Image 1 (cartoon, rainbow, N blue to C red):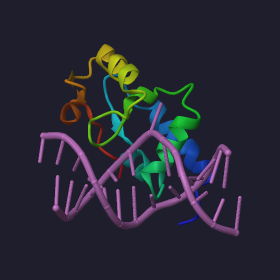
Image 2: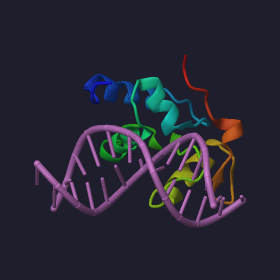
Image 3: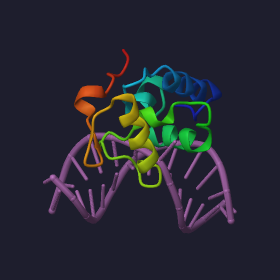
Length: 100
DNA sequence: ACTTTGACTAGAA
DNA sequence: TTTCTAGCCAAAG
């Protein structure tokens, strides 16, 4: 697989922007849908440029948000109706399935 | 050019 | 259940 292209980055950004309120997706699923070979790339994209995106709807598969953004993310998610219990996101209920 | 770092994940202990 | 390890890949120093 060729290194990451701008198309892939745009794909990830579009996918993130398409996540409905009250739902979440994992880095891995986004990477898979965008055709990226590693979820770290998605993490890099979010860290680099997430200004105009609902970045709080992207969560690790473990259900535990990464330190540093956990507080903000959990607060925003809970505000949208996502079940958050004891610092863990209720993925079973709110995780969107990966595309085809 | 090489090493370290990071908004990750799946599997092992 | 939680913590650790190896694999992963682009960016920064």
